[in-house]
Image 1 (cartoon, rainbow, N blue to C red):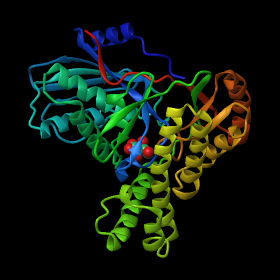
Image 2 (image 1 turned 90 degrees about the horizontal axis):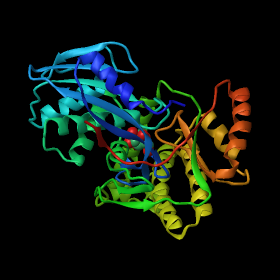
Image 3 (image 1 turned 180 degrees about the vertical axis):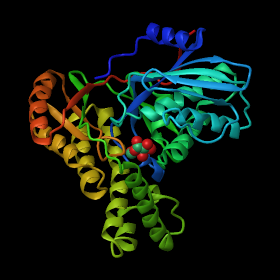
Length: 388
Ligand code: GLA
């Protein structure tokens, strides 16, 4: 597991690269308790920010130039604030995507030097890219008093992901990064953008991520295809129910009538989304009642849906869920995020964690030929200035 970022080493690295002191901002990764692949269908999500972040050190320039370096990746990106297009280095692209978002809003920046660092594992499904874009957007906005609010910066981050990574993602990840609060999940209505905080305090229970260490190179095209499949199902429903605006407005009887007779796969995709929205609302009332067992059971149902109906799981994720299911003290487990790799999120009794990780690591490695990484997570605060 990546160690927490050392802030004084980070400042020193900025000083070595640019010969002056930075202001520092950070934005967290996210977990999601339930509500997967619902955000781009105008549904509900229940994410939380975590205590791991992407950090941006920044200082202004007045000559229209930008320089970006990274603690973790090689190379210096040098260019002009007005440059369009991508970097040959790859990793600066999210920052450039965010900069483009500022330009499109008519905000001209005078130039800057930037250092990027992180203690968020990359490729684990913790939304390091959204955290990166949010940290850059927040840093530019603060440094230059650009007058954007958090929702503007969230939209800019989402667009950077669409354009620069080609993933047609929803709003959940940058939202959670910007609006997270310690000890809370955020229930977000992705249609109205209304949200409220749902406290998560389960005495004796914890959330544990188990990283499969699987990274699927086709994950982004498969993600985009799921989005299209949902849109196809929606079109078919709308032919009979023109008042329907998104899968959020659809119920299973509409699917029985308009989608099931035409295509089983499209029906499965849409039905999963309809069921998942209902499950999320039910899980929120479980939490209100303090019924953690019921909440855990719903997480397991979500996994079934994601694996069999939405088909975004993979053998290693299924392996991990199956392995913990039924263990005394494990209330719930499911794959988390876009899918095809990354982590499972597990709701379990704190006192069984060490033994479980120990036993499962050995079995997982032996059966899958990959290491298992356990990531204990704490919820944390959203995007903020750190120092300077
Ligand atoms: C990725 C996307 C999100 C969301 C999840 C699935 O993390 O970036 O917008 O769609 O997958 O819930």
